[in-house]
Image (cartoon, rainbow, N blue to C red):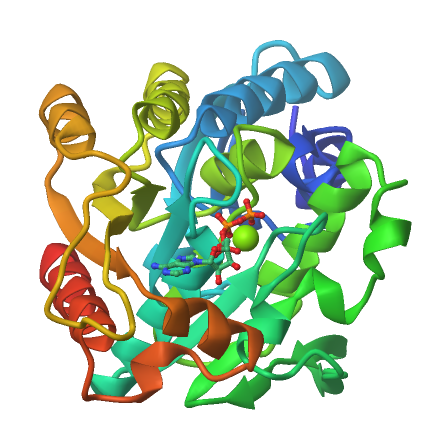
Length: 346
Ligand SMILES: Nc1ncnc2c1ncn2[C@@H]1O[C@H](COP(=O)(O)OP(=O)(O)OP(=O)(O)O)[C@@H](O)[C@H]1O
Ligand SMILES: [Mg+2]
């Protein structure tokens, strides 16, 4: 028998790519179909290849075509990545860096904002994506809380234009939803919104896209890990034993589920306290050593130690991250962190 491309395409519409909740044909994942007698070769494009979805979708293609068309089809599936093809909404983004932690309030957003500014100051093209829908703080830290991203049409599809400030392109769920509305959102809605910020945005060419993740290990963390190629995660902790325990749990979850996001290193925030009136003093008010133990245990380096200084909070609240200035110990600590991140992705 002879089989046509149309038959195959129609059948493939039954195969769903769950991460994007649509069928693989409409998602544009079928790159090529080659037919030779009863041999069918299909090239399928995935956001990333080291993803369990590749095996699941490939199996599903095989089963569906045999069931819908003919049992004796010899089907070969070649998965390729969007990056291989130089396509995909994030193909212009070289390195996606996720700022994660098991615990709330340890300074993820502060680290994300200052890292982004420091990377930009080092001459890189940088974006920051605030994925914390329950408590978006990036717009405040960049002084753009009233920002309303514009829309531009690309290949017939509307794309959000990130707001720019301090040399960084910024998108946040907070631009679109009020926090009290967000509380009523279900997991799937949050995931969809997150995916849109990632892929329906005009990020353009970026050296780094820094993602400020919500605390913990929920839906967005899984979506991020399964659907996107993350260059690495930066684990933020504070020196208290109790914070370290939460961060350890998060790190374990990322590893245990084989999510395969490499952890670039640990940033210990609020490492020590420097009083405004005695800048030469260092007080280790949260203790010392717990982050070292964690680093050893996880076999990852400590790539940053950020002191606790009143100015960090003030500048964050005022929309001018402390890293914009040059002459202080905190901006130097963030510049060092940026240098380590640059080094670790090269
Ligand atoms: N090194 C620091 N020195 C002084 N204040 C800091 C420092 N790091 C963070 N803060 C302050 O601590 C508070 C919490 O920080 P931040 O919002 O960055 O934490 P987070 O981990 O993102 O929190 P959440 O889990 O709610 O998203 C903020 O008010 C911030 O300004
Ligand atoms: Mg935060």
